[in-house]
Amino acid sequence: MPVVFFRNAAGEAAGGSSTLRILVATDCHLGYLEKDELRRSDSFDTFEEIFSLAEKHNVDFLLLGGNLFHENKPSRSTLVRTIEILRRRCLHDRPVQFQVVSDHAASLQNLFGRPNFEDQNINVGLPVFTIHGDHDDPTGVDNMSAIDVLAATGFVNYFGKVDIGSSGVGHMSIHPILIKKGATSVALYGLGNVRDARLSTMIQTPGAIGWMKHESTEDMPLSDWFNILVLHQNRIKGSLDNGINERLLPDFLDLVIWGHEHECLVDPKEVPGMGFHITQPGSSIATSLTSDEAKQKHVLLLEINGMKYRPTNIPLKTVRPFEYAEVVLEGQTDVNANNEASVDAHLDKVVANLIEKNETTAGSGSEPKLPLVRIKVDYSGFLTIHPQRFGQKYVGKVANPQDMIVFSRSAKRRQNTQENVGGSGELNTNELNQHTLEALVAESSLNMQLLPLDDLDTALHVFVNKDDNLAFHSCLQKNTEEAINRLTATKAGTDIEDEDAMVAHGLDQFMQAREKGRTQTPTTSTALSAFQELKCSSDPDQDSRHDSNELIETSDGECHHEKTAMPGKRPAPFPATARGRKTDLASFRAPVVKEEVDDRGAKKGRPSPHVAGRYGAVRRKR
Image 1 (spheres, helix red, strand yellow):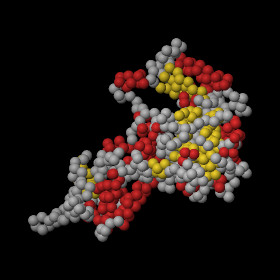
Image 2 (image 1 turned 135 degrees about the vertical axis):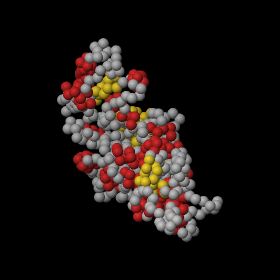
Image 3 (image 1 turned 135 degrees about the horizontal axis):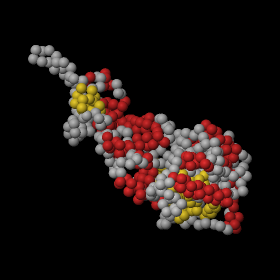
């Protein structure tokens, strides 16, 4: 059934007891710039305003679309301030007018098995439902996030957290929260942030994502449920690796609430041919200082009655004002290409105009805030000035004097410059981000199979950007547990008596299953390299205890047995004597080297501890 808007007061009054009111906000980024004395409270001021609007409009609950926190591990100060706001705004005697009729354990991430407002020990008057974003996503061995802390304390209802597995394409089931208020029934689906490339692959893989639907009854058929999806991803702008195509979403949805994008496009837009609308509320605080964030910030009041809904845009008044301008020095009559003073004077005029514009458009608030100013300057063919030195003149006049000016060059000018210098110019930092872990492993000719490259890439991202020191440990543990579970299942379902042969057989089956699940991302690694990789990483001291099993560490990062390693030739995954093969673990062991004697019966001396390697002599490990 197509979604229709209702706008007349009579229609609302007729079904007022069935109208579900939801206030939607995304990307609050609590704790942003908490060490900046001037801007440390900006995110919390706006968060307080959002709750004030929720109380003013008498909403049933507050719905957050991810990135509640700016840091993956928010400071104690940020956590305390957040909990204080939630406790003051959410805990009161106002009755909750709706009920959740779905399986709580399947849709909500908490140990108590119910929404917080159904807990008799907590008096919740304003429920908060939230998913996680890319800043506050779960990490670590236990897959926990800061939102889990809020959910455990009973202040928020955390949903949209899924485990897609550590290998292959993965699989996940998305269970909706079924909400009923009078004659209105809403199925609220949530999906926290997942790496764009992997989620895009899963959406395009049949059966990888299970959209669990509610049961259809005579009194409540499937067509009478209003289906909402809340997700936190990049909206596609180019390659599928950089975002999610909105046309890949299921067509049974009625409304999609898109988080992560900071540009405010709050008015719902219909996706042609899909039958659902998309609203993008944008962030409640400016963090990137781009032209998209210079627009007025809003939250969305969503009123649902049956299969009709009415969106209302509510502007946020506590957001720090932000003025943005782009300047091209070429063509400016008052700017000399070889005179820095003329560039400085021209930019002074631009800043003065922006400050004056902000003063004329600023509201009559009780405490006006210093504006944010960002000027993007195309300096192609001109001398530049020192941005920090320029900003010192505006301390006390703008909120960000240290980064007001950003210099850039046009694409054509930049290309000509690079050709003139023969490609030996300064390395762009953005180019460094394009080197993926897959490319680095391919360049090093590493054969990886027990530890998938996708998982290692994710662990590296979490280690660097989320400051999670256990990221690689968590990656190793998940893949090890998966291998152990597969080996255990193989042991129960086979009649192989020899334990070593059973382990090798199970490992072989595990590798074949994993390889089958990665047909879209083929790999060149083998089961033998994976076995040796696990063996070398689990017991590095083994080589020093058994001279007969000495390993030589080659330059390509693999561990090879001296007798079985063939330069330029990859060993077979498992030896097979016939079509119905039986793998023996002993085939992985290096043969015992017998001591040689000369013609007189005397033992020959020990071989040289150095052997020829790819880049010269390589010393044996002892």
